[in-house]
Image (cartoon, rainbow, N blue to C red; front, side, top):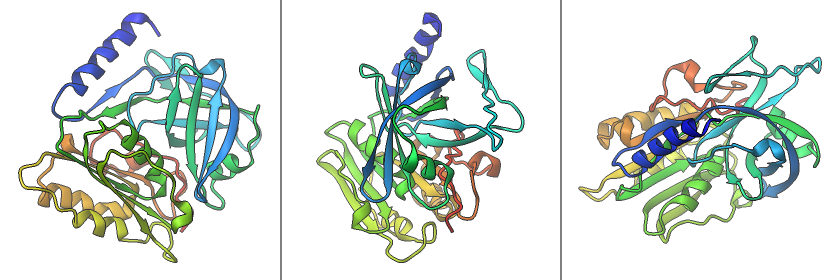
Length: 300
């Protein structure tokens, strides 16, 4: 990446951070080969895959919910990769086998990227995360940019299921320690809970789904609707998870809270019964920076 290119989007990042409303900021997209440094179980529901090696050089990470694509060979073993095209990537057709995941952590000094992958039987990324060994290699594309949310809001409302947990965890770490608000995370049971580093005035509540199948619970909707937002406070709402369960909350944000897309972001990371769900294909994304997160929805 040329120095002037980096300077331009770094300036834009600083402008949005210093502003009053959230905005998507793009960074030049690259595809890189990285080495698996190791894996670690986080509770019973997530596996952290740590990637490293020289391929990390030039990686950019500025937003709690930004994402990368992990790329795998086709069934016949052929690896087809996108190629650089200016600041974007040109993708071969048909599109290579891939899944999207949140960048949980990037440590430039250590040259490491953490990807936390939600586990469920039969998921491509989930199965890979459970069996992959240190030294194996994987190609990573992105991130294409991130939603930059200024720290100018009075309160933040974050909620989602376990597929949103990596982004919520990073959100809580990166919010100012003076931030206030709420974080609701739906998990199956206490075994899926993990340690979170939340500001003192952000209430964190775990919602236990129990025997209800993933993507069929209304726990997040009920918790979010019950939040007592003080009159006059500026609130930012960030919600992610199973697409169908989030639909009623899109209307609630718009009609009841009166918030526009600049003060809220609702993203379907997966959809029950649909493998490799891409919300952009549904044309229903609330903020226009679709994740199409490859949290495989074939677990219904």
